[in-house]
Length: 269
Ligand code: FAD
Ligand code: EPU
Image (cartoon, rainbow, N blue to C red; front, side, top):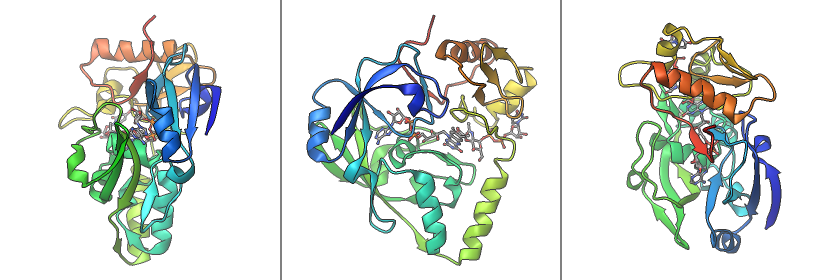
């Protein structure tokens, strides 16, 4: 097991976050050791706003046996979802198309029940392996309380492996579906971000509301509300968590929206 001091800005898609101790676990023994003291689990860091001061807890990243697997068998939760989406398309197996373009680890996608308007990961799972209080348990996806960008995993539970529920389908049909999902992302910014900052309120879109309220292009330091899609905060290069948080606060002072991002550490000034 590798343990090292890192800056979390190098491990998040937004490119923001201070120091932490990273524990890269390779197997079950490592997992037992790494979870002996307070910890957090890092996936691909694509839904996180991490404090400039970093976090005190150990940050566990799944590597080794938890980052490999087979499309039609058990897949490690530390592996990247986009790789499986592409592999399934190549293999003529349908089920993962709605998840095209989500830059998640498999475990982070389960934890957030990542999805698009075309479908969520909860509908593409056959079984999920979860590590909790020193034990690995295999559960049906219904046991995880998966809903719109949420799960009811108990605190400290770590998704370690999943089995996808895939069905044979013509490759052309899969490709056509993926093109549709891709097209729905056209206005999403290419710059560094953590995806949508806020959840959509029932029956509406946070992006539309933030846009209508006139926030597009608002900049604090090196952080900006994307002029392309108002529910994305982008890092123009060198943004701090404080700057990003200031934008979140300004939006929340004007609109009653629930954050989709997870906040790690202290971001309030
Ligand atoms: P992280 O950001 O690393 O962590 C998120 C949470 O999951 C944390 O609480 C973390 O502790 C927990 N976690 C991570 N791994 C595990 C594990 N193995 N076991 C238990 N808990 C774990 N999301 C969507 O739903 N739909 C989209 O279309 C979408 N588009 C995006 C586009 C872009 C450009 C970006 C940057 C993000 C987008 N997102 C989208 C947001 C993000 O990709 C998802 O929320 C994703 O599920 C986060 O996965 P992650 O592995 O990066 O998790
Ligand atoms: N809109 C605006 N202005 C904007 C942005 C959007 O008016 O600046 C309007 C659009 O015209 C549209 C509506 O808002 O009528 C919805 O926008 P969009 O189609 O871009 O989808 P979204 O609801 O903003 C959701 C997910 C995305 C996912 C896409 C594609 C949430 C919070 N967001 O976005 O997921 O990729 O659908 O299916 O549910 C994420 O969760 O991080 C994420 C990126």
